[in-house]
Image 1: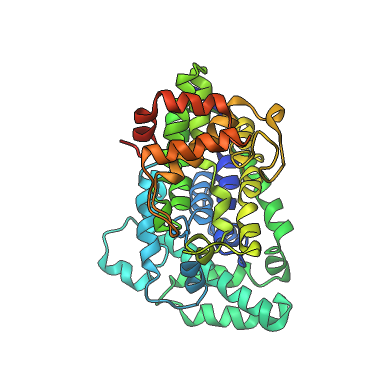
Image 2: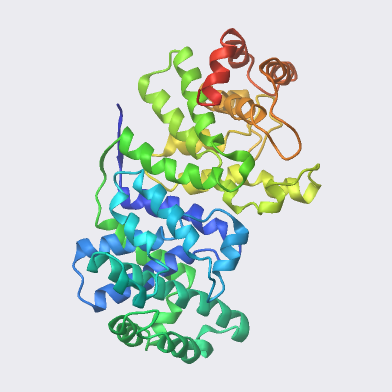
Length: 408
């Protein structure tokens, strides 16, 4: 298996950008929660390892949310069904060995402090989960204050009072006291602005050096984000897994190197990560998209590229994933690349994406048969859209491609 030389902190932080897209309006929520949680942890004297776990859990705390409607409900200070996304997030983190130790923190990040009395949860897990719960609610209140006053500084007293009102019930007494200390200065609140939050993380990323990460470990983390994307709509369940599996299979048929096949699989898993910005009603529309709706869809591959390109070591993954809607004739999007600018891997990924989508139900049609799929992609090759050599390879191995795309 291939090792990838990456900064794991940078990878997690950059991929968390996708989680921020889900809120559409509440961009950078996870990062603001991470900043505030870390400030509270520092005030409590946490060592660097505990702060690292707290920060990672904080920026990933909403990994169980891919639906914009759910995200909107979480923007309410109180919502009785908030625990659902905690359970989903904990479950998917368990599947990734490098992040599994955070799963119980995520599971309880909406648990009221008093409820821990009846739960068998390690003290440090309960503490970290409650810190994240508290500052998550602070961020919700701060966004409301921004709307109400147009200046966060005018809402400080109101926010601090609402958190204080939950002292001893929702939040541990000591945590509320710590929050009152760190949030007393105007600088704490002004640091919630995007440029300051982004700057804050540089120090955290710097605590981790670039090091070899195995393909298996990296794939397990990447699959968290592909799961979040595919869970956004019932019509796209396992789409990213199917695209990744088919792309890797086609790479082997073309006798690409083992490393290229593994990288192609990772690109397939991440190719739609930018789609988290797309509103649910657009993705699930049963009829033809309007021009404005289609333009919303068109930017997702651009967002995918811009999220992935920030990760050193992900250069090829970012390029191939970002080009999955490019076409050999130059009429794809978002870069209008022509055949000469598209590697074989990018052209394989484009075919795998179309094939797998046609093999699944969509809101506007049922899944198509093998023969119908091959007829459509062959026509697209004849029209100068999809690569003919890749289509021919699919035709020679149609049954196996079908099984690969549906993970059979």
